Image (cartoon, rainbow, N blue to C red; front, side, top):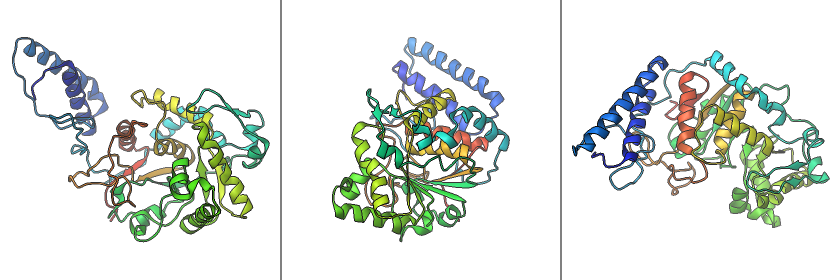
Amino acid sequence: MIFTGHKTYIDITISITWILHFLYLDPMLKPFVVTLGLCVLGMCLILDLYGADVKITLAPSLRAVDATGQELQRPNFIHPVEGEWELNRTALSELRSRLKPLETAQNFVLSQDSLATKRRLPLMFGKKPYYVKDKDKDSTPEISPFINRTLGVCSLVGNSGILTGSKCGQKIDSGDFVIRFNMPPVCSPYLDDIGRRTDLVTTSRGRMNSKWGLLKSRTGQEKFLHHLHDQYGEDTFVVSAPFTIRRDIEVLLSISELLQSSNSSVVPLYISPIHVRQTLQAWRDLGLNLKGRINFSSGFYYTSVALELCDQVNIYGFWPFRTDREGRPVRYHYYKSVDNGGLSNSWHAMDKEFEKLLQLHNLGVLQLINGNCR
């Protein structure tokens, strides 16, 4: 690689630092690593000033690019993380102390108790707040169902195609509380890889639109109810975030009315936008670099929630890259034959979130499983 611009120098210095970081260097050596990187940078600048061509071969960073500017999606230098892992209760306790002001058990979802004092809720994307009507307030639980409750060992199951062939289903189901995202199919032929149990599943306006026509027709409503009961079972929590943007509000709040009118035992819950904002700021303070994004992914948000509510957090199916470590294509979702994954999601800083999850895994705060379970 010939150094021809300041951006190249910076990228390469960061790459050196992150490669050594992911090789599990002792934290005491990190100042030395940074100093070494800066020395290399200065040397390259001087050599370039005198017209010398400088060539260095490096393992790619998470955001490395090839000669055409195309992102290199395969993180060859990331070690498999399905091997030996031990829960570090001290590190987990320290993180929880930093997150404690969020009072997640009480504030994670809206309740009649929380809405009694604050009916005007801010939108994540929008200046004008939304006033929660009486009927919508009454559709929320009296208090948060997570108060004074420990969820035990939690399995967070993402939808990445990295799950395909993983045989992680049995291990996922062995958790005390299983969380899934955006109402995925939990049925044959995926069960051996993804498990069968679901205790909490999220949904979104996009999913409600693509699968059930925003519940505008009776047919759409019936299919939605059948999917809920058939794929996840009774007494499951179905959680959504209606106060992200204004157009989400009507369809997502209508879930409660539909479940009530059909005498369903599925429990609808709504995320508090105030808690989301506070959680976002807490993780920024903890060093999560979102590169200017104003929100993080639902996967990372629920990871934060689980770290406060669960005794142990095991994560499956979180993999934002287009290929696995052997270079084989990875579908963005395990249940789609097309729709390749990658880091191109403009709404979230998926690579930075993944880096943070790896860091937490290495610290023993959570277990990130992205290989085969058996």
